[in-house]
Image (cartoon, rainbow, N blue to C red; front, top):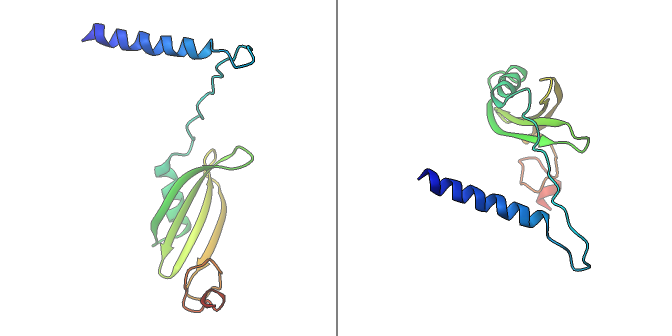
Length: 125
């Protein structure tokens, strides 16, 4: 079984070597570009959830994702629901600082998001 694993690894390595040495149609040698994986965030998901729950006590988490902003900064996007209110929080994944806390109150907000909210006049037309 160990020998089989070694063979698979050498085949995979050989495929990589072939990809690195491939040539394009015009005869120029293409090189494989190694892209380093993004570093793990300093603030982990569990920590981001605790920060969000402190920001909106008594709510429940509806969404959590790690997003990369245009400036390259990693940000936790957390949606917390409390009653009829949804808080969309952005938390810096490096420092844990709450960057924004946008409140979306679907009961009384004309957010024009395409959903049929109770008092959303523009969405009903």
